[in-house]
Image 1: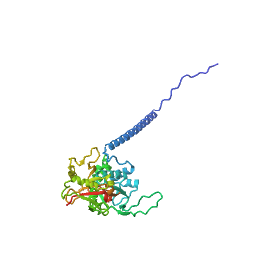
Image 2: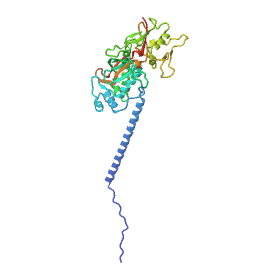
Image 3: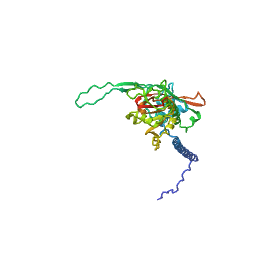
Image 4: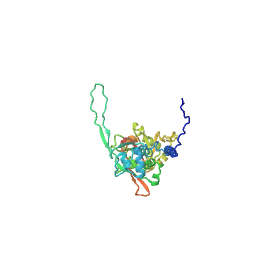
Length: 388
């Protein structure tokens, strides 16, 4: 019987097509290059974020905080302030341009307000209210008693009818016009929101500082020194009239200026003395700092702790350069609780108009804001007058 023959030889695989191997190698190289490109893109993005964080950390901080990095702020800053584009503003907030420009985002407006409070002397101690319109009115009680004491079951007698007076601070449009070169605006590292807030606040502070002291009340606030003044005591003077005491000298603070200052302090009611402060300019303060009591002690005391104000007779001293110098008929020193005595009313929104045409190659930012001011409680502010 013939046995079957088994072929034990194995056939070698057919040789691979060189063209297919080449295609496979090219595909692998393409994938590797794609992966490397994606990795490089991720690294570049991380590096860009780190650079932005480093630049933001290197920027000077304004009043302890920077503008919020929100889409509204970025659209306003990078779109309108840097390039003059209004598309970002309209798409983000629906803002509509007015004659005064665009209302700045709240974050930037808060920067301006914080910086303004820090450098405007009267604003830092007065009562400030925000309004949504150009005008503001407030009723102030000038007399009458609306309360009394009775037993639990006794009848309630009729009280006096309260008397009121209306306070409507005169307002005006405050404006500033800082400028920057286009090269500055094109620099991504230039912190335009902090710069703009600082420039606007500085110009606003100079203008309103003078108005809150000596403003005429016509298209601007009425300064507290513009109010009528008399020697009549509280309860006798007409509403809105300030009380003053004389220095006893026609050219200076008199022979006993320390005693005059004590009299000035105590013309103010005890309730108002809590939170009261002296207001004078630096030339008057230089004279006051030299005053001594009978036993040789200075009546002025420097602040012993960082951040604490200098004090005169135990009360803070606020330097307002718009206060008059010592001279015949002048009121160089004011003392009072200005938070109760002087009212500042302002429309909350600051308007900015970008102007790249008037003074090429500079770009001006015309900022406007409506601000008003008036004496609120004439019993809360007292004056020292150099008698003629």
